[in-house]
Amino acid sequence: MANQLFCPHCGHQEQPGVKFCPRCGYDLRAFQDTTATASPQPQAKTNLLDSATAQLNSWTGQRRKVPIKLGSIFSEVFKSHTEAEAEALFIGGTRTTTPSLTVVSASPVQPWLFTRVLAVFGLTIAILAGSLFLFDGEKMYNGLIFMSALAVPFSLLIMFFEINTFRNLSLFKVTKIFMVGGVSSVLTSMVLYQVVNIQNLTVVTAIVIAVIEEVGKLVMIAYYVKRTQARFILNGLLIGAAIGAGFATFETAGYAEDFGLGVLLLRSVGALGTHTVWGAINGAALVMVKGAQPLTMTAFQDGRFLRFLGLTVCLHALWDMPLPLPELAKLGLLIVVAWVVILVLINAGLREIRHLQAVD
Image 1 (cartoon, rainbow, N blue to C red):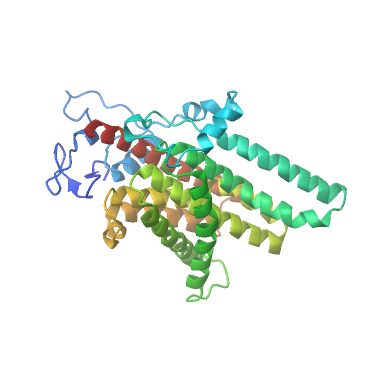
Image 2 (image 1 turned 120 degrees about the vertical axis):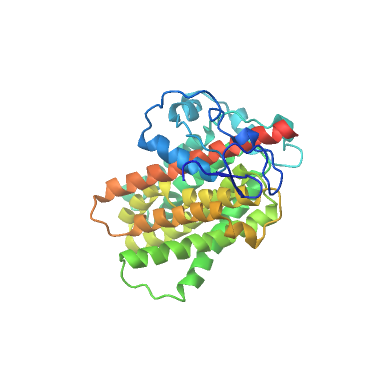
């Protein structure tokens, strides 16, 4: 399994050493492991993380591990940035500010603006909480719920907006997808819930919930992928994150209204690795198998897409399952796994840019 190679264009499984896809003629040389034909070298020890990223990366069309360098990725977070730099990021994606493919950056992504957005949310939440608890400002309660539910998902969405180095989706368009697509995905899931009766949370019902909600989000992800004519992996990552962030926000606000601020805090922290991230994975996988072609049912039947979809369903189901594990340990592990998948897909998206620029 670890040595599988799939054509990034048509999804055909290739044999080792093949330079061009026999089905569609796609040039595979940029995706081959350059060490495959080199003289035999002593095998380096691989750890679990390297094995996992190599396996996940094989689903994107390249067989090699993906180095995880969080220090490099988030190095800009702790540096000083001006408001002008932030505004330059926010105005991307319009007709006059979308860069051509030749100048799109394929360098490792280094998002930072999302932390400033999260800080603004934090300040707003602190003011709302102070008004509520210190001055008995009951009218602040609903505002506190919604802003708390919104903070982490929307901040993550800004991070994926930064990661989309194509700069071809404006913040206005992404916000529309977040709001309309997010609430529509909740509605789609509610419709699907009408055909099943879930009363108690068990292993089986957790799987059913995961399937329903991931499919509910996927319906809207597919709609916006088709509507925006998304053709790059990083585009799919952003669109999926927008749908997932909207779903997470509206769902968390609903839970907090019913169960109080304790649930709100738990779900707000847990949002680091739930719907926003799962939606981003499925969006990236769908655009990866679709490529520049129109979206058809063939993409949903592609084995590479189904692997990623199945993975998000598993992560979602495990998140909800009543397992004999410490809850925080379980949630922490699932968040780490989800972000490893995201980092592999970001690597695939940057690799796609380099390949497109090479053949352009």
